[in-house]
Length: 389
Image (cartoon, rainbow, N blue to C red):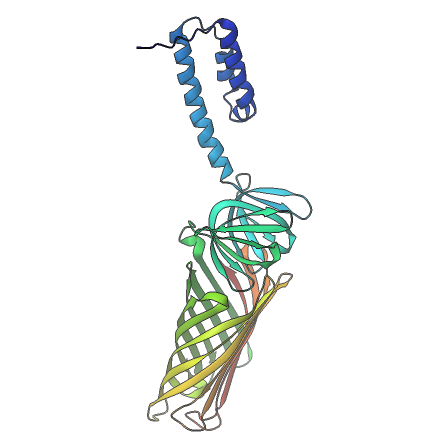
């Protein structure tokens, strides 16, 4: 049996302690345990028992330092083009704006993506590139290149401007929800005219799909005139495919006294593609089939028909505090020869502080064969103040 005996005199022991202190001194002082190490450094160790005790203490300190260091390493970092550095937790990048939470601010920072020079994170994100590629992984900058390491081990080299969307995979439910509500009121003394409108929307964005609901309502009251009502609601589900393709399904309902519509229920399914998808705008086109079921307030027999549809949507959001969203869809009827319907919507929004905004919008519905002749077109102008989540 062989024994190894190691003798530590006071000089060796002091050297050992000083070495440990020198290695960890910067981090330890930042972690507010410098006083404890100072005591350890100046403690006289004359026995093996004391030496073992020292090792245990140093191991405990090293353990907590390691935990703290790992925690700090998980912080994300942004380097701006003006050389400012922001350290925190990146929440998301969407529509040209990145949101980051920091320990030194009660509210999150929102920064225009065009002002970012470098970005670093070891936290897994859902990353969407300009070419429509969707990647799950981490990323860090090397000079002007952003290196993305996917969860399957692949490495993708890109640049900051080609990243159009980020969302943390561990983000909570509310971090993936977006919602808005706006309302307007108009009162005219003549004929006691009163008009109010409400628009609302809520959506949830998962890693590969998006679900949205909306509700719009317009009412007009006037002396000696029947009340005018226009209520529209609907929901949609979008599943994202590679290369900016997507599948979409939607159900909408419309009740409109102007066109004698008690209810128009439309269900549609199709496929679409984003031809422009950047940090400044996106433009997509979609097409598919739809089922249209209508009942009327004027006693006319209900109508059920099959339709095709094709349409386009454009969103511009890099024009200062303004943004613009517009879409148009045409529905050629497949079972009623010669019938066409067109839906058009345009919303312009100006952002105010505290997530409030001012919105102006117009909605147009056209049907070349309405329930009553002469009511082919209906349109609504909306001016409202709203708030968004």
